[in-house]
Image (tube, rainbow, N blue to C red; front, side, top):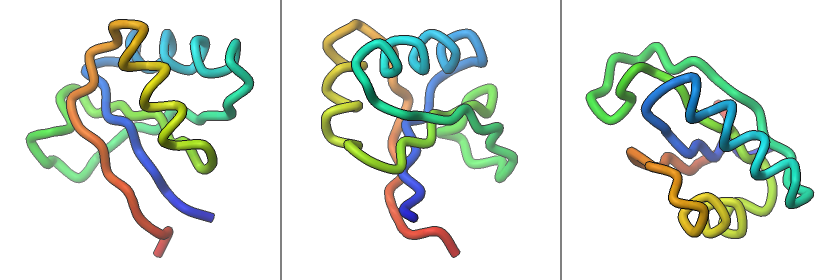
Length: 75
């Protein structure tokens, strides 16, 4: 399964994003990021294993502040 992360600024944004995606039929998981990279902000992201491009577009159109994205395969 792919690990595609949409990194947001806080747990509040992560929870709001998860709710928005769920209402659009897209499964996502909230993850705490602990790698210390500067793009992580307070360290929360939405892991969107499928429909990543749609999820990104939906969140972007909703006005969600997205700090960055990370895409790739799980190790």
